[in-house]
Amino acid sequence: MRFTVRLNFVLDAEQVPYFTALDKGWYREQCLEPEFQAGTGSTNTVQLVGNGSADMGIADTVAILLGQGQGIPLQAFGVVYQHNPSAFLIRTESLTPDQQNAARLSPEFLYDKTYGAVIAGSPFIFYKAFVKQQNLDTSRIRQVNISPPGFTEMTTKQVDFIVTFFTVAPVLSGRDVPLKVFRLEDYGQKAYGLSYFSQRNWVDANGDTITKFLQVTKRSIEYTNDNPEEGVQFLCRYNPSVCADDRAFQTNVEEQKLQIPLYDNVIPGKPYFCADPATWRATAQLLVDAETIPALPDLDNSFTNRYIQGC
Image (tube, rainbow, N blue to C red; front, side, top):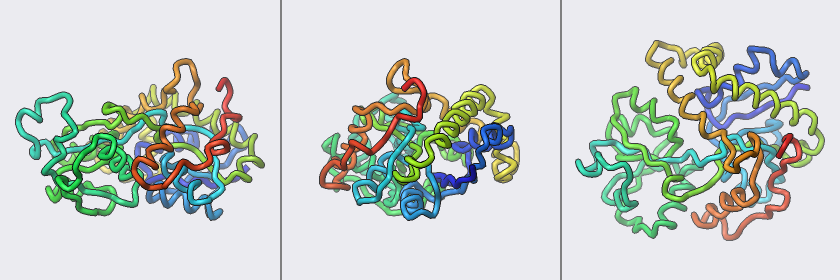
C-alpha cells in the first residue's frame, strides 16, 4: 500500500523513527510504502491533507482541531506527543541575575521582553492561551512577527524569546545562544502535541493500513529511544545536513533524546498514541482560550482510538 505522509516540518530529529523504520524495512515487511514529505508547519500540513494533496499527515493537535473547526472533514487517529512540547526559549542575558538562577519564574517575567512570534505556527496559539490563562497584560510584552523557526532572530538578539518545541533548545545552544527553557506544561497548560490525522473518508477506508502504520511506528519509536545515535544516522541519509559535522550530529542526537518522554501516555497504563477524551477536550479548549475559534468544534468524531491495540 503506497500512501503519502506530510510531515509537520523539515527532516530533523522529530522524524527519526520514520526514516529508521524505512531503512530497516519494517514498513515494507507489513506491505506499507509510506512516502514522507517534508513540511513547512502544522497549519500548512492540515491544509494539504484537507485538500487531498497528501493522504495523511502529522501536525500539532491544535492545528488539526482548528481545521476541523473551519469545516475540513478531518479525523485524528493517534497522538504522537502525549505531552505539550511548547515552551518559552529565552535568551539568558535578557533575564536579571535572580531570574537566571531561578528554576521557575512567575509569568510576569515576560514583561518588558521582545517576543518573536511566528503567528502562523501552532505555538502562537499556545502563547495566546497562556497569556490569557495567566491574566498577563500583553501591552507590556513587545511582539515582533518573524518567520519560522526564529533561530536567526534569537542568535542576532533581535528578540528575547520565542515559543516553540522545547526539544529544539540544543539547536540554539549549538549556536552559542545561552538559554533558559520554561515549558508551558509546567505552568498548568495540559495539551496534546503532534497527532496523526487524515480526511475521515480516508481513515474509514484504510483502517488496516493505519493499524499497521501505527504498529510499525511504535516499534521504531521504542527502538530509536534506546538507540538515538543510530536513529539520527539513518536520518542523515535523507537529510545530509543533519550530519554536516560532529556538532550538527550531536545537536540532533540531543534533540532526539529530549523527545523520549513526550511519547509516554498521559494516562498510566495506556499505550502509545491512545487519546484521552478529557485531554483532547482540554486541547480544544486552548483554541477558545486563545480566541482563535468562538466555540469548541464537534469533538464526537474529532479523533478515533479504534486502530490502537489496548487503548
